[in-house]
Amino acid sequence: MKKLKEILANVDYELIKGNLDIEINDIKDNSQKVVEGDLFIALVGTTADSHKFIPNAIQSGAKAIVIERDVTIDEDVTVIKVKSSRAVLGPMSASYFDYPAEKLTTVGITGTCGKTSTSYIIKSMLEEFGYKVGIIGTICAMLGDKKIEVHNTTPNAYEIQKLFYEMVQAGCKYAVMEVSSQGLKMDRVAGIMFDYGVFTNISIDHIGPNEHESFEEYLYCKSLLFKQCKIGIVNSDSDKWEKVTKGHTCEIMKYALQDEKADFKASNIQFLMEDNFIGVQFDVSGKINTTFKLDIPGRFSVYNALCAISVAYKLGIDVESMKKALEKVKVLGRMELVSSNESYKLIIDYAHNRDEMDNLMDTISEYKPKRLVCIFGGGGNRAKSRRYDMGEVSGKWADLTILTEDNPRFEEIESINNDIIVGLNKYNAKYIFIKDRKEAIKYAMKNAEPGDIILLIGKGHENYQEIKGVRYPWDERKAVKEAEEEIKKEVG
Image (cartoon, rainbow, N blue to C red):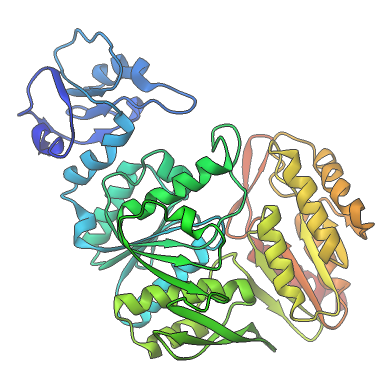
């Protein structure tokens, strides 16, 4: 319980009617979840306007309403008007939970690719040094070892503040979170002054209805992070880093593989592949001068690790803790080695667009596999251009593409595959179609040639397959293990 005037402490508002001294039970932006004593905040979204649900909220017991549009409310409730309900939800929620971000060291990571891997590497380094860490991102939210499902890479402002509060209660000292461009655009991180803002990279993505109108808007939204952090840590090899930090109000530090002026520079990259290990070794110079070994493959992973090293340095983590963390860190569904024997190595990755897939396959090709076998499908009810692109990338790199199901949603798999095949045909690529995803995995394993690397991509950490409106349980690791067991029984 908290008084309304305290919740509004850092908000510009107009009191339309009622009393600011009332006690508020909780803040809700969904009228169906309102209970007696709550404050209901009416949001205007990209597809819906919740002002029309105000009567429902009042009927359920809301005693205060926050609006941004003129509406008539005759009931005996307090009414507050603001310029933007979405923009004030963060500061109001922060006040309601007693400003938990101020009790944590916060790291916000933005970029088209690499956010998830970088956040988990930072988490691993902090834990190696002895700290308890909270994390918010694409895979889930975590309070130490406790997992909490989230529905967006960057949840809404109230959820974030509640998670920060729970992190503090759980004894976490650090919060590492992915900050999506959509999250910045929709004010989900409003009211947070991050201790560290991180930029990994940027490429054309998330342009379209209900996302970003243009690449310029996408860039601008990314730049907002560097107006609400104290220290910015950026990949200066990106040709867009200066645009992303345009108008920044923070100190800037740089990491890179090519930029000689970077504060942290990686070089002498060696690609290592052993029995149950596929990773990299690299030297770092600048503010740290030593050699690191990372148990995640690829040049792209060096960027993620170097970014984490830069953050860890500023956080005061010692080099030995960084090294130990890098040698054992695993990121669910991100270049994750899940099966390895004398015939093949099988890697799971979440890549599901042109750039992610191209980076992944370029990376794996540097390990000189006998054959590169790629298993994937396309998401239904999504842009056809993404399928053409993914087909083209697989055609360019893979010796064999195995088309299968992903999340077909309400589309037929054959229709999705036909779009992917358009891209494959640009390279006259060899492909086969096996509808059942586990059977596709099993086929690749059973027919592997010594030295093959099999890439199972598109689903990564996801725990479901969405078909005709139903989400069926699915786990890539479990499917791989079951396929292995079935092959062993068949071989006898």
